[in-house]
Length: 325
Ligand code: 3HC
Image 1 (spheres, rainbow, N blue to C red):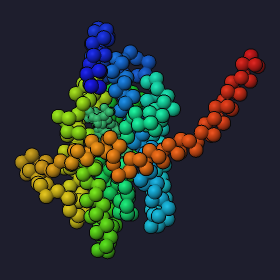
Image 2: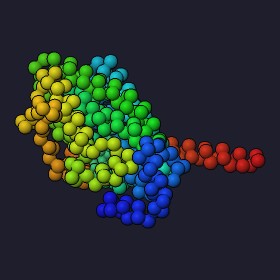
Image 3: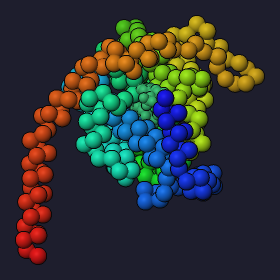
């Protein structure tokens, strides 16, 4: 439906402008907010950047949950810094989306009433301290795999936001792997916790890249516009190839009996996640969807007095300025 809508919108655009726009994309130009762009390009970016921003914000919840329970002061400080980074990433991305003519309030309202998505991964619970390791290692690892190519995306503000975000994400991935190394080399009970975290986060991490290329609605057009640089399956494969040796180094077992290295291609054959589970999570039926949206709605409602106060102050200041002129 959406891809069709974007196509039919494209057919209403001025063909000369469309061709010139595509030529700029093909030549590797960055598109800036005041440049002409097709409506479909603008809408696709608002959808993708908005969903990405929401993921950063909702993504604070499963980890924020562990700040008070981190095992040492050092781990607490690191986790606190990581969760704050995610808030910052959300802000860079909301700012990038705002340059396309949507406000942050509008985006937030669309998240809160379910019109916009956030990453499926954050609808899974974090049950033990080892989950902080698995989230950093696998979830941030998958996020980086997807986001490094996005540094070259065609929309200038998005590309620049991604450059800053990727620098911090690689620290996040390493702190996660560091937790996993400690747990995997710890007592048998700690190693068991690390294995259990890997077992629970493996398939949801594979889902982060989106449905298979056959099922992906937006990939073709998004890649032509360089809003996406790779297909979902390409990135998923790269993630598996990179992550399996890391699991072996930890002495842990990837929960996939069909995992097999093809010596010739250097790629692993692997089992697909349960896609019916993925689509169910997208519909709002994951283990934590309701809890996550309830937490974001509460934060929005609790912060209303601050927003009202700031806006009233800004209105008063503007009125004084007008009166003085
Ligand atoms: N979770 C939720 N929804 C997903 C999804 C996922 N993991 N993967 C795909 N979808 C949705 C799409 O949004 C689309 O729904 P819509 O039409 O209602 O918007 C539908 O499933 C079909 O998927 P497509 O492959 O056609 O969608 P895209 O072309 O948008 O590809 C994507 C999906 C690869 C996630 C792409 O949007 C993308 O690269 N986004 C930017 C990166 C991003 O959003 N990352 C979030 C990860 S978490 C994070 O960054 C936090 C970090 O701190 C860990």
